[in-house]
Image (tube, rainbow, N blue to C red):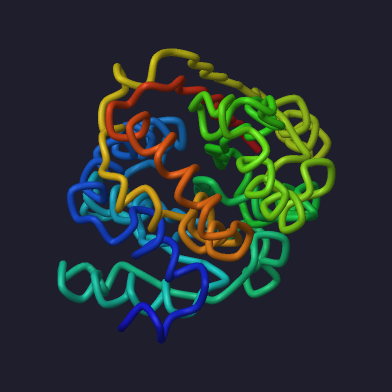
Length: 296
C-alpha cells in the first residue's frame, strides 16, 4: 500500500504524521504506548471479553488489548478502509486474526452492532474528528452491555488555540509575524477555531455528553503541560521532517502550506528564522489531554 494510493486518514497516520521519518515515527509511538496502557487499564476488560475499538487507526489500542489477554476478542472499526486493511494485515502477521473483526463504521453510527455487543468501548483521538459527539457517545452507550466500560482519550486542542500572533507551534516568530499569519490563515480557513470538531469542545463537554448518554461512575483525568520544548522526550526532529509533517489529517504539511501561501522571499525569511528554533528545540510545549472513563 503506497502513500499515494491510500485515503487521507491512512496517509496521515502512516506517513504524514511523522514526515516519513522512521526515527520520528518511533518517538511518536513511544509517546503513545503510555496512552494505550492507560486507556486499556481504565477499560477494565475482563478475561475473554469483547472490546470494540472505535476509530482503531493503525490498531494501537486494539492490538494492545489482544496482547494483554490472549482470550480477548477485538472489533476494529474505522471510517478508513485503508487503515482497516492495514490493521487486518498486521493481525494476520501477528497470528491473531482469528480473534479480530474489522468493520468500516463511523463513531456516530454503529448501527451494524446490536445493543450490548461489547464489554468495553475504547477510543483514542477519535471524537476530535466527529461533528456530532453527543450522538457518538450515545452509540457507545448503546453497544455496551450493562456494566460495560467506556474508556476515551481525547486531546483538548482548544487549550492551545488560537495561538498568540507571535507564536507558531510553540516557537517565537515575532520577527516574522506577518509571514506566520499567512500560514495560520490557511489553517484557519480549513479548520475554523470556532466551528471545527477538533477545536470546538473541551473536557467539560465530554463529561456532559457521557453523563447525558446515561453512563454512571464517570471519571475524568485531565493532564495539562506547559514546559520548555527541549525537555520533552521525542521532540527532537530535523527541519526536513518538520516541514514534511502535517498536524492532522485535514491540514497540509508546513512545506505545502508555505508553497501555497508565501512568496519565495517570504518562505526563505520564515525558514531562516524558524529552522534554528526547531532544530535546537527552543520553544514551548503546550498540551492538554483528557482521559474519560465510565460504566454503563
